[in-house]
Length: 291
Image (cartoon, rainbow, N blue to C red; front, side, top):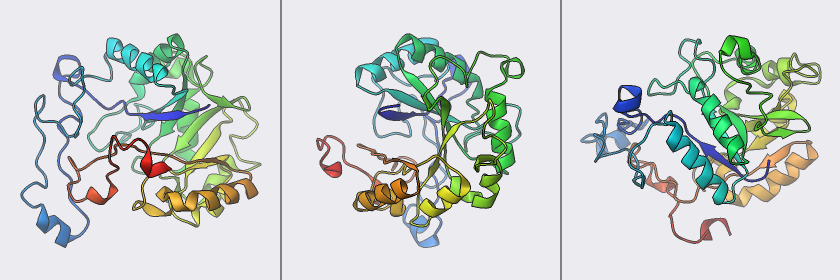
């Protein structure tokens, strides 16, 4: 699997997708009244592309669609040239599932095939980053995996058995974001030693989110194969704090979990969360945060 980069497929432009997608993201509220009062002149407003976008960095190629095959091919080439081995694709489940979209109403299911083919051309591997949706359960997660393994129902190409699919011990790699919202006993019904996915053609190498200290124990009891931190800063939970990674790695080893710490150099979401400046990781510091 090597070095993994999370890639978001939610971008769209009117010429290809009929409307702007994510470039015009609205500014989100904080969960406290006090913080919202500080930014009440901004909360709820939308960005206005192409000149005003939600991100602090402007793409050199301009705003683009994640469904544009030329963009996708260029991105895979650039990712490979940067030394990355695997891209993990944001995916909210089958396109048929009601509510299986991100907060902006975008479902990325129909964009997977083009990414896999482009990754294959550039000798990259691809993993799935399974995002949460309303009502997600262990059972619906298993249905989602079955969808990826059913070429006929999807109406697209191979996914789980695609040549570019990242695998560990012969099993496709899937990251499960916000996995802690489902109880370990429920996860174990599909991921435990006798879980419904284990030993079948849909058996996958599943990596759950380790956000708080007790999640290591929960992930092991649930039957996950690994744990990832996703966040890479000192303010977003126990798992994102670098000072905890050595102990987390040792615990993961004791529990027979793969440990995947994540870094986010240049992370800055103040364009949609102006109250989140503490989570910003400065860009151009030559990796000092992670040394």
